[in-house]
Length: 187
Image 1 (cartoon, one colour):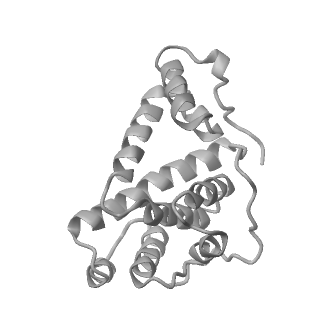
Image 2: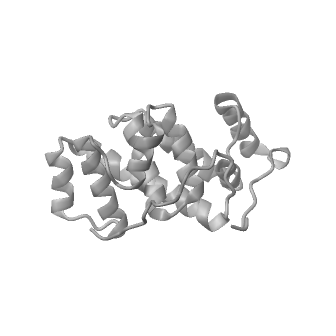
């Protein structure tokens, strides 16, 4: 993949981009390439961070949020985001085998499976959820607040996937096995 929008080099960051870099360095120890790319538009980076951090404090739990993000990345064929969420999912208990299952759209947990099925339908249908799609979440025990959070996590991750794909962002995360994982939109 060729880089089409290069990440903003930290030594070239000024103003609010520089402040965001400093904040990210302090909290994460580094600034991932995608966030450096986003930093060309500090308002986008700042709002992405705020939205992402807000969702992390939501009712879904960080592991499920990572599983949704990982599956959206797989459905979008975004290598950068697959690698990023495979790495970040580990800190929330998402092991390698379970991450691969997630990427295949499968979970042994019934609630997680309902979310993955819903995610696949929503992405495949470009957001056009049916009453049946929403009832799948309701039957699995997700109340309206959680349903909205699920939709928001999907949307936020489509943003980062599309940005990484369009910009040609090179990964700064450990590579993961991509062999044998289908990108299948057949519902």
